[in-house]
Length: 215
Image (cartoon, rainbow, N blue to C red; front, side):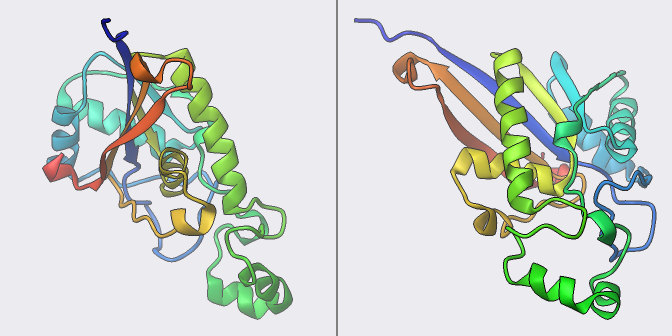
């Protein structure tokens, strides 16, 4: 008996270029710019990515600007579909602040947060566990919508960790241990059909936090 064919949907996750600003504050969903002057890295990413791909980004301009810079470095153009559910964690009242500032301004709120830093949300924000849920639902939806395609998603450290957590069945604390650098490439494939028919498919990891010059 011949095995049914498998359908593979390939996710090419790229974390946006470094933020154009001070290193240290929690920018979260603040709409700040990024620095796209690393031509070597941008050309390497452009060369590694499939041409016939669906492009996605979050609604934050650092992801859209990074996508445009990669395309320009590769001599092609893209217009990513905007997916707000792929955005970075929202840090609420703490966005734009440093941990040391928050400890001085509201020590009680910070103490509560650190009792469960992935499960508790900053004041007015969302927890990292909620990011995992939000991104997981979006990835499942988009995988179904673009089944069998290559998907290039320019996103954030938090959302890429969330996608890896879904694929590896990690809880929020374990997912936080994953390192996702700026302009790194993470490959995650969804395999449906074949021997997995009727089970919803399975995930496999092609690479995590791959430096652009090695992509």
